Image 1 (tube, rainbow, N blue to C red):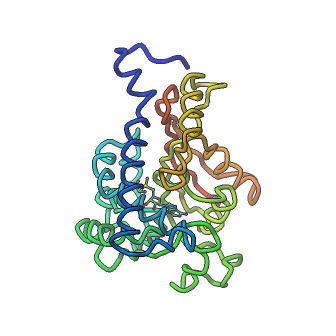
Image 2 (image 1 turned 120 degrees about the vertical axis):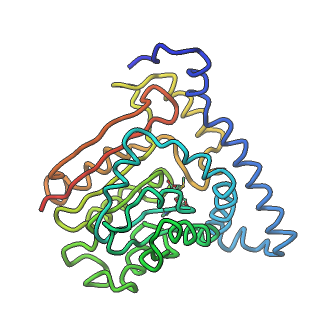
Length: 285
Ligand SMILES: C[S@@+](CC[C@H](N)C(=O)[O-])C[C@H]1O[C@@H](n2cnc3c(N)ncnc32)[C@H](O)[C@@H]1O
């Protein structure tokens, strides 16, 4: 795919969009550093639990910018969110910007796995405003198995403590702008696959590596590499611009069951620096 025939300004914006965000991320990272040292008087967190510091810095950025960054979502994301049903795992819900697109009448219970506790008050508020009340359970954990599985076990959602047995726990798993930032993504995605009930659906909207060998562009891929080189992941809470997320999702089902029962996937803006894959994967029944 070539760069679309469009005004030059739009092309520049599509290629350099992450530039603005990284500037804000660096600013909020340093504000968090200063408040951690001089206001909270807690400098030891930097070496005791750098991940907690990272979540604090990202929370500050997301509370400032998350709403604006959620006004437009790629492709069918919002339509897919509206179809979320049953018992749901909401992976990395952040401040809950997506909850208003969910229909509480279709959802029995929804569990948000959000490790950045600084986002929980806003998450709970947005879930309440969206009509969920006690149906939304904000959990202080990530979605990597080491933290997710014990937390789900405590919630009584698993039939065994390691989550390895049983028929899955969730009718729908939501991965919206989260798999770019989780540690050990392949292992994590495999765990999510196992947690889906037979016939369950994984709804995703994720930015991925520019598919420059097929439908992407070499310049989009090169600019991704440049942003990664100047510390994109470091400043943005572990987010990567160059993950092969779709391939990992496909592989998770191939390894367990020979593939997904149904795949509905579309790519958006494959030419640019933040191309998305959006869709639904349905587990074999
Ligand atoms: C870009 S925000 C997206 C928030 C929300 N999904 C949305 O689209 O509005 C990414 C979220 O993933 C969370 N996150 C980071 N590491 C995570 C992990 N290991 N497991 C689950 N969520 C994580 C971040 O704290 C953040 O809230």
